[in-house]
Image (cartoon, rainbow, N blue to C red; front, side):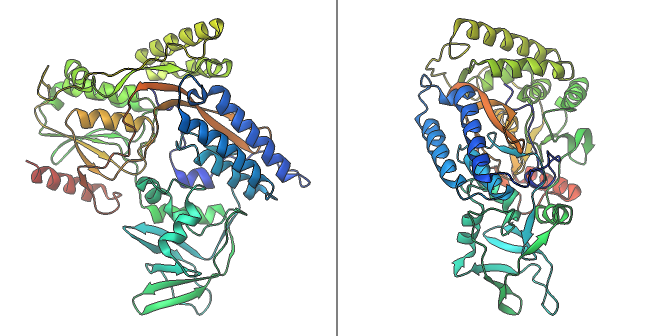
Amino acid sequence: MIRALVLVASAAAALLASPAGAQTPPDRDWAATTRTDVEAAYALLNDNHPGALPQIGDTDFRRRLDEGRALALERAARVSGAGGHRAVLNAFAGGMGDRHIAFQPAGPASWTWAGLVFRKAGAEWRVSAHEPDPGEADLADAVLVDCDGAAAEATAQAWLDGFQLDWSVEAQRERRGALLLLDNGNPLLNRPATCRFETADGTVERAMRWREITSQTLQPLLNAAYRGRRAGMGLRPFAGGDWIALQTLGDGASAVVEAVRADAARLRASPVVVLDMRGNGGGSSMLGRQIAEALMGRAFVQARTAGNGTCGAVWRASDDNLASLRSWRAMAAERGPEFAAWLEASIASVERANVAGEPTDAPITDCDPAPARAGTGPASLMQGRLILITDESCFSSCLIVTDDFRRLGALHLGHATDRATRYMEVRAEPLPSGLGAFSTLQKMALGEMATGPFPPDIVHDGPMHDDAALEAWVMEAVAGRR
């Protein structure tokens, strides 16, 4: 029910603006440090992640975990600094196939660049910002052709895949593609010597002169390259009806739920109601379900989402998972009574399993829920059109809410979402080196679970940072679907 309680929402911010950690000893044995942290990350997953249990039978997870550990230990021998340590841990986490599992560095990276920041523009990699050398022409908006003879797409995949993103997921390429040819000390990558660009005046070849850039200088360039925008929080009118902005399912989302509940009678009669989830990286999917029930009625929502493929969930029973659950009591008051009741029930269930020495808090069962059928059961209380907007940031509990609203008949607009797995409830533990933390998941949905990516019914061609333009486009899209 709650995919993630704490998640880093911005990929670029996570890499550039991490809180400062302990000072790194100048005589640190980096290879040994990396091996120790890899083993600690492996133990965290092996001892706490449901997918590691033989009873689950997830052979793909088990393969990823064991092969990922072996590769990370092999790569550790090549590590001679913080950048290499970070790269090995990033790749180990990325290889697990779920972005909830992540290395979270304790300090900002040191960056080197060739004066270029790129943005993904459809099938092209365009220059978003360029710091030319004296006498050089500005390459802003030029299209990358190739680097050292490798085509642009191959160059991007080799640089980004596994270390910064999962290349197979469109949302991650769009969201994190600006990290192309930005080097944070990864010894496993080869910096290109020359690249060619297509400009208005023809093809230009440039030698890549690599130099340092501070995180403070780089961050605004990355923000400009992505051109994303978070939805904000709250309920407001717009020209076509009503707009519910929900950029997080965490802090502040309960107030949005209450605003929708308080105005439910009017919203049900509104010609168009938009749920705008731009920038939403997760939190509690329970809050999204509450908005749906306030708009459409609980009976309708429960009937239409009953066949979503899942039939319950189980916690991996461990002392550390139980301690994590207990720590969530601190946020229970802000999340509301339904969350508090769910949390206490979860704690009691894991406590019982730990005492009994059972691997999960409930039996692991096969299930085949009957799919919900459209047009049967209770009717929706909404009279108007329901619109859902997502972008590349939609992840974790945002994916669950997206699946719910699509099943409830919402017209899905915007950009494709990220993806996850049937595992949920993320938490992180510090690594022995003090250089960062590593995260695991603790719970598994039973049955088949829709985990994305979710492509929209109508794709918005371009960035969605202009609110006024987006509102006008939404009304055009709605008119075209009447």
